[in-house]
Amino acid sequence: MDRAAPLSGIPRRLRFATAIGALLVLLGTYLVSATDRADAAPGRTAAPVANAIRVAEFPADCTYSHRLPDDPIIFPGLPGASHMHSFFGSTVTNANTTLPDLVNSPTTCNPLVDVSSYWVPTLYRDNVAVEPAIATFYYLGEGVRADVVANTQPFPQGLRLVAGNAKATGPNDSIARWSCLHAGHVPPSKDFVNCPSGTMLESYLDFPQCWNGRDLDSPDHKSHLAYPVNQACPSTHPVHVPKLRQVLRYPVTGDPSRFRLASGPGYTMHGDFFNAWPVAELARRVQDCIRPVIKCGHDGRPI
Amino acid sequence: MRQATASTLLIGVLLVAGCGAGPRHAASTTAPSVTAPPATTTPTSTGTAFNPTDIAWLQLTVAMTERLLPVLDLVPARTTDPAWRQTAAQVATARRADLDRARRLLADAAAPTTNPHEGHDMPGMVTPPEMTALRATSGQSFHRLLAGHLRAHLAQSVRIATAEQQSGSQRETIALAAAVVRNGTADLAGLDELDRPPGTQPATGHRE
Image 1 (spheres, rainbow over the protein chains, first blue to last red):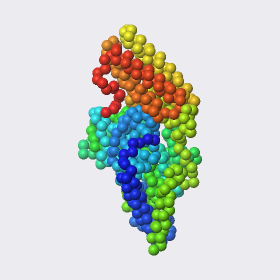
Image 2: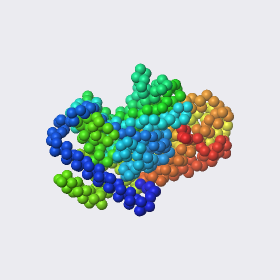
Image 3: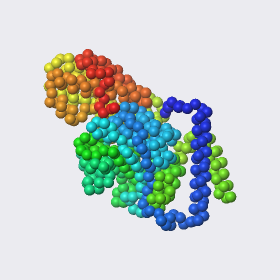
Image 4: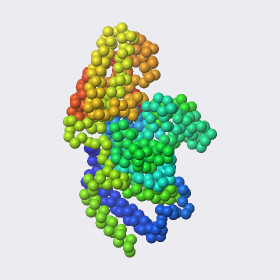
């Protein structure tokens, strides 16, 4: 895909050199620490760090980046074809985005190594766009048997995932979940809830975690992934990948009738994920956090 | 010392790999023990193969047209104005032909006729509440509502058909897009004769 070259040759070479340098330092550090650990604890996978929190998790916190009526998964190459989306992570995503664009892009994520793109329909209050104050994307190993978690594979780079139902016509065909931050007494709902002042409106959305092991996308953009059945991945989608949980906290409260999504009512909440994590880094986090069931921080190290 | 040597070795390997990493990079992006070619492959030859933009545009064209036709079907019952009736009939005939061609092309591509984002407040689509409002009006106020929806639909159709002409691949699909741009532009001009636009910006649903 064509993109305007933003920089002349010299700064670009410099930038490239800097990036390579940083990469080498990182890799060198990792190799050293990995060797250290291997020396110290040969049976490391069976005996995780004693004081680790036994939750299979690592997070990426990605603040709001930009809005566009674009969707490079559902409407590739068709700018303006979609309802309004709010983008998180990679700052370059538009209708024409492909994997190489993301790999080289700046990101709003903590950690900075996550250059993936995440997007959701924009939330409006009284027809004014509202963006999440907090947007967290958890990578989890849960909802399946322990032996399945122990065999979790990283997402292949370039994998496209969608969750939720943008054309839900009611709460019954939706997996959306709305609740209030710091107000647990308000029952969660598939549609917007009325949050007391001083709290925040929250949206939870879980992505499917069983991959068919073959396709980065599919004609309906959904069927290359599936949700687990009976705590395991179905035979059609045998590869267990991390469960991506999107948690958005919007700085709005009160009357839900003032809210709408660009896609419609609250139950049309959906999320799109275009994976661009560096292959080795995502594999390391799956190996160090998900498989051994250890809660990791943004750096992908045990908390 | 052993660690330092290992790091140096790794650096060397990386430097070598980095020089020609382009194509190999793609191959190394798959999960362990599986090959994962992109499902949305780019066409091997332009002209006959459908690319993801072709499919998405055809699906959206079907969805948008299916939403517009019931609006146009309301016209004879809601106005006696011959100019409006004629405009509506003319747009409906052209869009029905587009719809047939789009459906045939989707069948050729063996692609699903629906897409996950159709059906809810897409730009250029009339929503069910707007449909209810149309059914409740007639005469001049109906003309005004109809003009707004028609303009939004045509402007959005021309916008995305133009994008298909730029990013699409399959010859007949691009030809259909060219027809949509041509007819849509003419219909917009005809609409402006019947109903002066409120501003220079066409209404396009929920855009900022």
